[in-house]
Image (cartoon, rainbow, N blue to C red; front, side, top):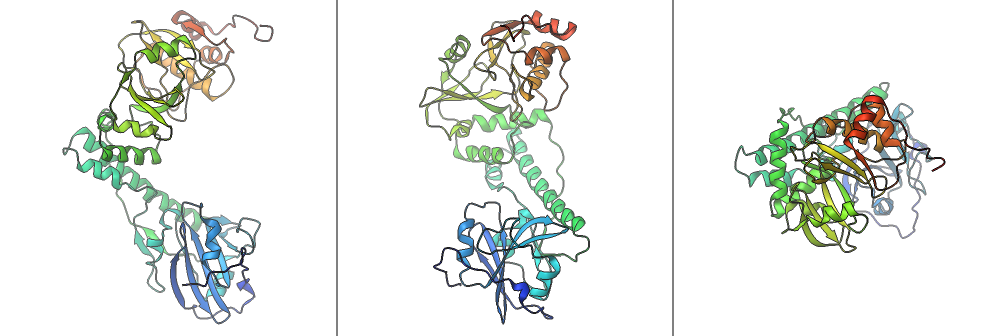
Length: 430
């Protein structure tokens, strides 16, 4: 293909110094650089490569070397700069915004035509290699993630069961959103570069918008997947978590860590955990060195004990109880929140991924906790919401710097909610 250079920093010629072409330069084809694709054209003065990066930039240091003795290398970021597609000359350094910008009319003069642009989620070698001059854009399915593991898991379910419906719904939604992302990518570039005649190398294959699946069926379906003990279900879970937090779909959308040695409430909760065989849900803890698989029999949430005796656990998005809220315990650092119900059962405070609860300072965590406590006072089994407005008194209560181990009764919470929060002491002098 190319003669690989032995120098650590190949030098690139600036093709803008070459005479403008009237006829299109001959196209040599596309080449896989590993994480990026290079399209190469030839001229009498030398060859020109346009590099299209994919989603991963981990191998960028080798891309220029892989192009060997190509005289002129241009990096197509896929972004916009000064109302033109961002094309940078790859000189002795990675072509960031400090490197020379090659404007659209300049690259058109260099190649003799407008080169193809590719939306972010259509920048794969398999797609770009299909492009040929004078044949128009190729049509390809836009995919940010590979939904094949999800569809394989769906194929192992009985038709029309909650699990089958939840898995196929996820795959359909993922493909539709990726299609819309590609459309948006194209529209944004066209709008920002309206004075240029842009050329597209690929268009997203149309994907119909899927209908909605009710939340009850969705969560029941994913719960079935979580409970399975096969690698097919585990792969589907990993795929789902790589694309979304699962806040809208999973019965458990957040993770937390508990040290049973830290306080009495952590020890109490840990004491009720039971050993468990491996379940698909345990794949979500693979980043830690796990020594024992566990499950919380009260909530059904899986957990695992790592080599440091720390318990990694899924957090229920809703507390499965018919009892009412009795008290709130603030212990285990500013993110440690426990809920006691009127039956005496202890629960980790429900939360959603990326929207965790906390206390003792003025930030997002206390804001979320105040919203959550307001809902739990009315209904202990209510599910947190990503957006909500906290009661002012509860918000102030959650921001107050309580001593670790503070227990707030239902009466304390209702008083703050109904009458406003009155600090019990001055934290500046305490």
